[in-house]
Length: 299
Image (tube, rainbow, N blue to C red; front, side, top):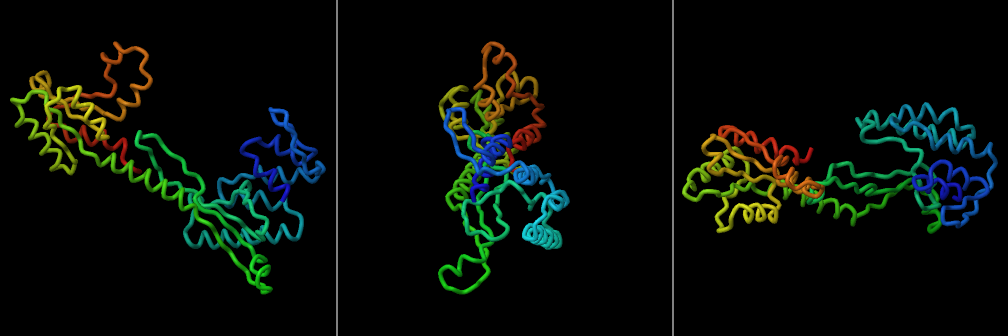
């Protein structure tokens, strides 16, 4: 179990740090000393080799682990993994779904066989459009001797625990992102005498399956954009006198605009370039809006 505790720190201290802990011990940057396991270099070598195995595919892992394992117990463990790989392959689970990872450590001493963790791989973004990583959402393993401790009966068992709180957080984040994506496109009103033209734009978007809202308030352009930001709307459709004269509409990617605005260093250049805005022909309104929305749709 002491060796497992050393391995569990790999992400934080690296291979050199684990090597020190497996020997006499390690002093961290603060000066604190952690006693080691006092293993010999000959004992440490196969441990580090195991940790450095290529885990990009199950076949590569199995090909690499067989030369390392010498004990009968270790060979039995490899045989179990070979059998598991056969079952997983027959069931259609590829390396993009299940891998063998030499660096997984579970924090309980009663495991007697393979341990496993489930990681949430569904792409999830927060309300600002930034990716969120939730990591492990379940874990468990084989513990053939656990039930015997309480019932005096030998009974093989496998179990797992699920991180309900983490799943709920991930679910909420995904729902928030999807709701934000489903928020309507705002058709701004720049020239009230042309309200019929703005109504036509909103109708055209709706007929194409895009939720659209026509601004009906009394605020000017800045106020309308602020309203769209508050509602987490992804796109604003803008058409003033210049656009109508040219037969165009301006599409403002509100999410991209918010992200880029955070790094503004030259406000005059920002106003001149307007990197979050594009002009498209009026006839390409739907295509232009779809192109922007596609940037934020869940893959």
